[in-house]
Image (cartoon, rainbow, N blue to C red; front, side, top):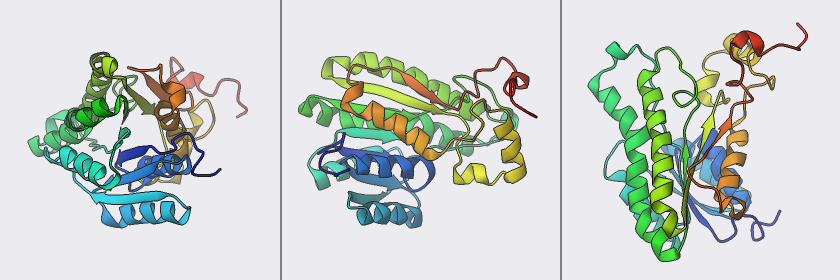
Length: 265
């Protein structure tokens, strides 16, 4: 496909947490559809790799090193994106902070980072983008949420789950508030996706997880990127305040015991 004839032709997309995993997949997919991509990450090595791969494929991308737990970071990255490309059409907040501890063991500093990156940054990015979206007459705000919190619970993930549930509440309310400006607000709720952090669990654990996913496999970051692409495209112009669950059906069974019903042992 020509980068000049894609679904995001002439669009500028800012994507946070784009150094690897889901974020890198979103950046690559958007680029293949013609978008100019601002890759935002706090890891310079992975960020450079993502940008280089996009450039090698014939796309256009730039790198911004930023820590979204910093309250001033969202405004700075939006301003830099507009300064470089002259506009901003799509903001994808994919960066996330995850902890796995019993809630009584979580320090105040860790709690603040999780809430700042996963939830507060959503408000800050939206606020920073709003003036540009209004001037352009439209905009897309997209967020990577999770099934953990909004759909299911997981031991040791209370603060993470709370941040993602809060994010889903923000998506719905912001969608209503911004609809008059032709700004849509949507998100994707991934289940188990084969990211670098999930790979650390080891092959044995991944096989156990896979056994409880009705589709029969762990998701690929591209699966999430495809859903994000749809929400960013003109095809989703009449969709706002919604989230798409991308989990291979893992949240469907009433109990994990039913996930493998009908499969051969």
